[in-house]
Length: 304
Image 1 (spheres, rainbow, N blue to C red):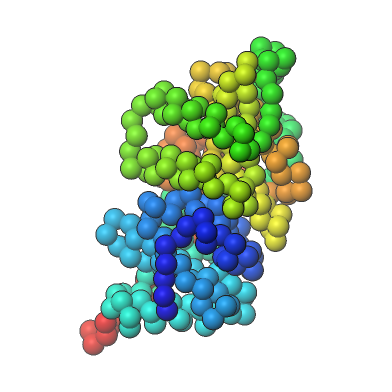
Image 2: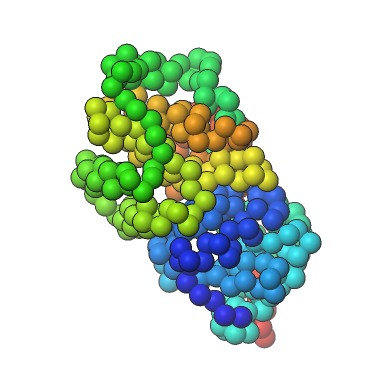
């Protein structure tokens, strides 16, 4: 096997693998993988034209992603990745961010593999129509914020997509947003770099986007990707001016309205174990979660 770094040039070759089988996690989006490729040092290999294999490294640990392929090819692809890590790299076999459907297909024996849920990585799933309408007492505050935004800015805003003629406007806004945000840790710095890469190479990516201008200035934008197999919108990026009341709620609603008219469900990704993000995502009343798991090979004394 020959692994190579994930670049924008890779996208045409690999994009089709992401929806070959059922998968409701954000890892079913090539855009999300591309966004975080540098933080996790993502490398990929197309195996026998049947599967996309990947390996990543984070915090000193190397691990594999779950192979992306048809359900019937998954057992062989999984075994091929296991062999590569053990025999060619000389490393213990480890998989992160494995989706539930893949585990159902593989039925890995408990005496050979330890499987544990990574609760901080589970993705939040929502009904698209519910996010558009925001009905019910629990969502009344978000409805009110949008009404207040429209009362003040209803004649002053415009909604459009990110295109070649305005992506630099988005980038300038993002730099201002970062100044307001303050501290920039490793994860946020990697996200900013990833967004910049997307903006520069968006013509090669299956990108859906939305931008809101207020008085001619960008005040919010969002990026995502569509999974047609699941009829699912995956929202990878959402940034708004926190000083404009209702701006986050409005871009959330408008991006789904204009960017994903065919979607039934919405994946708004994980909370990274952050209590504030968790509270915000729960406040939108998810219909469920796309759970993810860690897989670790069990080794005896005489094994690797």
